Length: 139
Image (cartoon, rainbow, N blue to C red; front, side, top):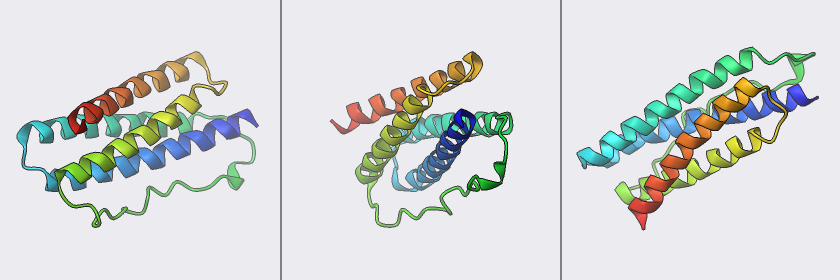
């Protein structure tokens, strides 16, 4: 049962990482500040790297009867059309970054092997840096 919980949490992380990657794509269109655009690019690259790592981790989870698991549907190209302006985009990114922080914190409470825990912890550290950036910028 524990492996199923791990797998479900990894799937939730993949969905959230995919959603955030899409939101950064949208954010690029809403900013004209080169320094902010550069930060967004760095953060998006972090999320893309995390996504690759998570997909690899999912492929290595040993589980019986995987047929009852949900499929991974990355947020069906979420629309962010209701968001306008650079600050609103940054506020939405902060919300999403905080949400994924919680998922990573929850993942570290599960009984994962030490290598997986190390990877999840490294990803969490990246996410915490993202949150700090947005909290300072929006203050």
